[in-house]
Image (tube, rainbow, N blue to C red; front, side):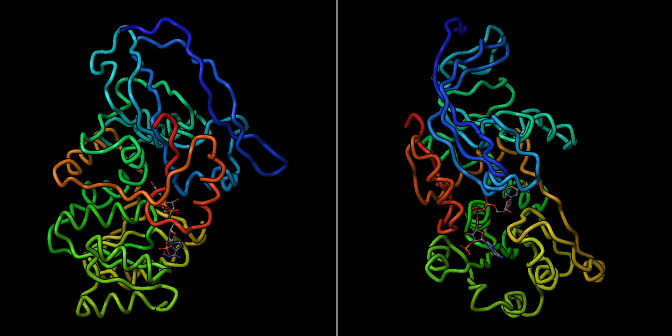
Length: 347
Ligand SMILES: NC(=O)c1ccc[n+]([C@@H]2O[C@H](COP(=O)([O-])OP(=O)(O)OC[C@H]3O[C@@H](n4cnc5c(N)ncnc54)[C@H](OP(=O)(O)O)[C@@H]3O)[C@@H](O)[C@H]2O)c1
């Protein structure tokens, strides 16, 4: 079916307010579809820490009027004249990078197509338009709300542990915190048969992580020397894979906790964008650092196959109504969440 009629809907955009930005709900007239595009009715979207950084203009590149958020899932409601891979009714999610389909990452992928970034509209809208090669089918066992949690956090965890890390059963993994990326990493690693050590500021969250299959848990507030504890837990060997989510406050301990030949997957900036630590100990361990930036359509597709094979259900902490988008941002900023925060758009 080719889209011919004009459709109306709404979106949220980031509106400059002095030095800060705030969300503004706006009516929207949808553009005509190009021949290779699909129109998606958004079922749900999810938030990532990145969206807080953009709202706060942390990189000084937030664009007035931009539609925020990168993660959505929905239903195809119209297709362009040359679309061959999708039909009306298909349940899909857009890839975080609209132009990174497979193969090696190139800098232009970020500049041209990171959804909700400075150059490309995001997904906090009733409808989105996407090229047919920039979306994936969502796993049949997931709701639209669950699938909306995947594009950034889950693809990042998959890319780190499986594409770059080649995680094997029996290997050890250390994960920092219990946010979105962290819990996907936990679920994926446990399904692969790895032994996961997870840290959190909350004993209650650690108990929930244990129920998801964590091997050991450490409260990083009560036990700041989590690196030494990880070394003890691994009989002095160290951890094979570390998901580095903290940033400057955690770099040095991650390097200390790493096993010889191990891998640090450099992902997060939760404690800021400060200086790098002394890297010499990595040399002494014959270890490596993998810089990770979300992933390609091919990564997302491989992730979905694994999620389906293991019937993994994303952990949603809380869902908000579309009209409460601002409250969802505030809730994520409070860091009370365990897993993902979702906004229902057309549930
Ligand atoms: N490179 C990439 O492609 C990529 C992709 C996605 C995300 N990221 C980055 O990865 C990080 C996590 O993102 P997210 O969306 O998963 O965040 P999130 O859901 O907001 O998770 C926040 C959680 O991180 C934990 N945390 C905060 N400070 C910590 C510290 N010093 N040590 C250990 N844990 C700490 C807290 O967990 P507890 O409450 O359990 O303590 C907090 O609730 C962010 O820096 C984000 O920018 C990068």
